[in-house]
Image (cartoon, rainbow, N blue to C red; front, side, top):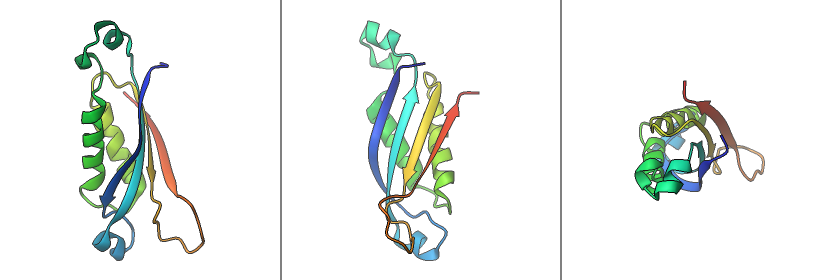
Length: 120
């Protein structure tokens, strides 16, 4: 499948992290999502119901990332993948969760996890 919708750089303030101060203070997370689907019908019909509305998808991804604090961004990525794959047109999704303010003792630009999941 070569058709896709990509959301890049969604910013969400959330309270995920291993350390108590991360859960207490929160921090920004940046999320990239690519979902693969067949866009032929949507393009032919010019009908948004034949695709995944990217505005709605962005809101759902942000909500999934913001709620229910967990220790690992791996868990956040998995949660987001499930939200995306709940859309019937979605065949496969790649989720990257960036944690640019991670508590790392050496200078860094970014830390991220990336997962790819497919519809069973």
